Length: 457
Image 1 (tube, rainbow, N blue to C red):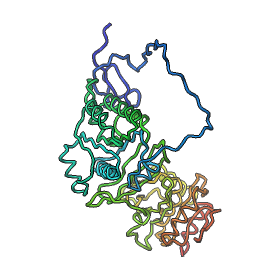
Image 2: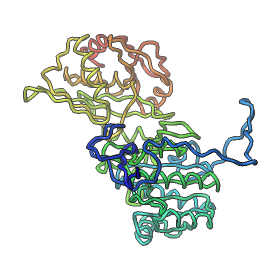
Image 3: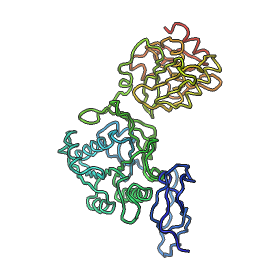
Image 4: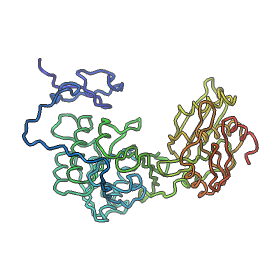
């Protein structure tokens, strides 16, 4: 029986289907199947490779686990926040994937980094698949980088790009973006799963063979994930997300994977007319303009990677205008908010059932740390009782379903950051050393309600 000339590939997970369906059986995504030309391989990729018949097979080299391996050298970009997220600089031979919303500043950041690297003596190539060379030059002039010795090209053919990179042998190559590249070896359209996977694989192979830092820019979906197959994130050495809102002036570069440095590290930038500016003290930026003696506001002392960051958590509890109360969350997990509300209702008797609850992390920062439980609870109770929290205090701690307040890690770094910014007290779990601050210890949420129900001073 002749094999079909076309197959249907899920653009979310890359699963191959013999016929079109409204829902992918592998990942459950709806309307994600796209028709592509068949490569001749059986569905599911179950074909077995033919055995290699060669008398010169390479030998497997084994080394001791305890043998010394020198640390990889680094290319320092000169942008401290970027170097921090990358683990101290870019490692030659590594592949980095940078994702973010359209217009968030990915191209601006990478153009600034390429210019600094070129100015320091590293040969740098910037290849744009979305803009013409003239558009990139105009952005460089606006950023004051027109005189930087960066080699520029506008191309989308993978074969042409690889030929040019082999001739130039640059130290750093930036490709903006991976979704625009295509290979003439595949009949699929640019941006499809097959094209993205094949192009990324060839570029990663080039990075390893030529010891070149390859930086790939990736689009994101409406869910905030990098578009294309998830296998691309496994191919590269580091995955960085550029976060932020266009209405806010700052941007956050977050590492979610890094083989040469810590994950969950962040770098903070501020968008200005001259480009992205580094923010060396993000806590001061997030707390800028904070009002005093306002109920429903708590300062959370959190950790982002190895960096302590203070930010304000705002809560508003108001009578529900309709039969079903609303729960709106910005910057925190809505499921964790539901848990904190349930604990406050069950253990403390606070009635949130007939009230709207709005929670916001000021400045647009996204918090995923359980240590924010106590700060969220304090903000909710403060708004519920209309009692402001002390203006010179920070809050951190994890809440259990039993109502107990559990200790969290890195308390010394949190308190040092708070003291540096002028805070004098902390509402924290029991057993926390002061480090120069007055510690108001709470062991349960009931104790938190009793403390906030009294005079907070």
